[in-house]
Amino acid sequence: MAAVTDIGIDLGTASILVYTKGKGIVLKEPSVVAYDKDADKVKAIGEEARQMIGRTPGNIMAIRPLRQGVISDYMITEKMLRYFVQKAQGRKSFRKPRIAICVPSGVTDVERRAVEEATYQAGARDVTIIDEPIAAAIGAGIDITKPVGNLIVDIGGGTTDVAVISLGGIVVSTSIRVAGDNFNEAIIRYVRKNHKLFIGEQTAEAVKLQIGTACRRLETKSMDIKGRNVVTGLPKTIHLTSIEVCEALKDPVNQIVETVQNVLEKTPPELAADVSERGIVLTGGGALLDGIEEVIQEKTGINTMTAENPEMAVAAGTGKYVELMNKFNH
Image 1 (cartoon, helix red, strand yellow):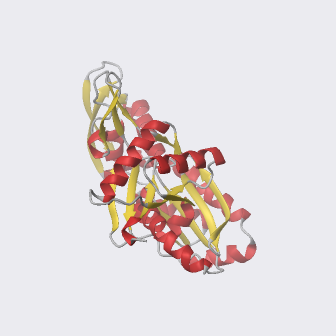
Image 2 (cartoon, one colour):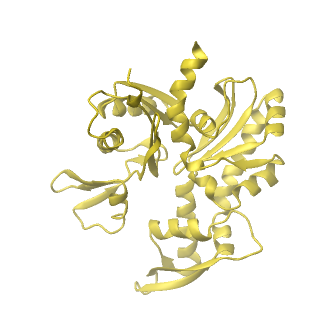
Image 3 (cartoon, rainbow, N blue to C red):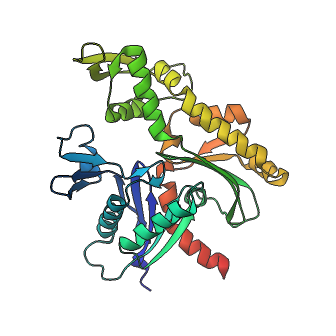
């Protein structure tokens, strides 16, 4: 079996990452498809389509076919997957790849089957479905095969997975539909309520990345943002500070912290002791939010750290999972 045909995919709500054996992460693009409903065809996929969000004429829709970690538009997801698989493999490949793909830990069997089916339709020879926290742990460099408890908090775009992992499996886990997208929505709501300004998804994302924070800092950052005045309907620019963004993000951040506390309460004592000794590991793009590790550490009293390249962890772990399980099972 040619090694090149092994692909790991992080099928995220916000972005798709593809990992190929020997090369690492070969592709990272937004999970967005621009669709022309008059001509009934796909206009653009990935980064090109993302730039169209909120800027399309009536006949073109910028669709995000995954909502909160689950397929909401099957046909479009399948087309998008096929496009990314072909792009990752390059033109030269004749063989169908073996693909490992991950799903949030809380999905139903039906949702899991939909992902599996879409991956086969996208051209896979063989499909392995992996729970996201397991992939995140492997990607973060944790040896999950040992009989030791590790707590992973994977904050993605649509879902946050919190899980205690030991001996290659999940012992306790919870998946909530609060993550990076909710940070954006919270910023949009806050700006509308307190500044009487409508802003789009892309502006909210820029605010989150540049001045977003989960806790108050000594140094205050700020930026100017443009949007539409709620009252007059005209374009307007306002000044937004990191203190305000911290206030805006309080709710979603607290929901994530509470989930971590709930999982810890359900963890068997031996594994809980391991976790308090080894610490909590954060992965996923949401882990890049400034101050989130401090907030979790403060509320749980457990040392919390963010994995290296947290947004890549799930994809890398998905790719390595197949190799790891082959060793583990022999």
